[in-house]
Image 1 (cartoon, rainbow, N blue to C red):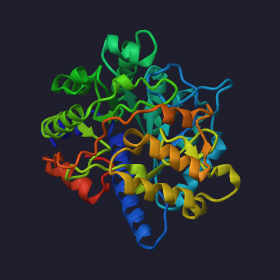
Image 2 (cartoon, one colour):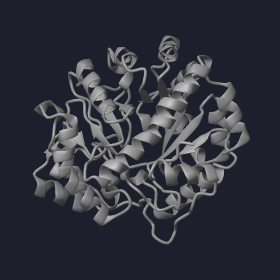
Image 3 (cartoon, rainbow, N blue to C red):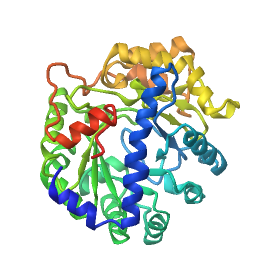
Image 4 (cartoon, one colour):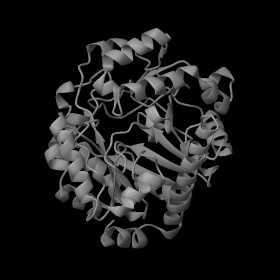
Length: 397
């Protein structure tokens, strides 16, 4: 953790927003993990964090995106979203990842967030719809951090995102966040066409100069109706990415986040360990966003706590996944995942009706589980956070 990162966090964001970030997200997130672990010891299960895709509408069409837009688009109702948040709060979970499609296409979203000032919402967005007025509203509410995805520089970004001048529009949204002193993040999915541009010190510093306070690196997963498997990293590139992340953390002027490795550099999967689950716009409860199969729906009338505790399906998925790999099962073993889904007679929750066919067509890809090539954390702060607070779900600084 660098002095420049601490200095930026203490001076750039609005102080009220920084407090919300530190308390609602940092402290309450830590407490949510502790409660999660205590529940496991009692033989009970409820995720520490919930990720909710509130719509399948989007203004872009990205390679490797698992979301299929429908006509008309699907939106989770504001009342259902409000109920989900209230149920999670009752069990000590106050952090929510809000996904789409593009979540800013959901009307009424900010009205729900305003009802829960004691929660924190990570808004996964492509940034192109963050206008001055949107950024001003996020600042007024104070409990939202925009996590803006950048999938490449100018040329690569347009190809990856299926649009024109996407990079420029995204930077404009990032600029509005900076002007309104938001706690802002950038997320990037590393693949073969962008690794040389984005897994670099130059990019890290450029993102910080543009106003981001944390940078979340993902590994590209070739899923969905346009998987583009040729973009997937090989094993050596994944190790190189891990080495870069570990090294840059010590000097970067922002927090560098991952959700793949624990403090010792061993692979972990949040869905396999049960740390988080995902809910679709039409209410299906999935292990994680790219794994589009389910047997439970929040509209069935069962309370969320009972749903998670009674779900033998989710429990069997966690056991099967952990027994198979510490890494990403959809990347390493799509054939075993397809067999599991068929055996369980699970619902295809993608809305396409083709998820099993997509798995059948997938080839195994490089994943972050590479025994013997572990690279432990070198920053004491990230090592401590991963070991004691976030159970390998990611380092949040």
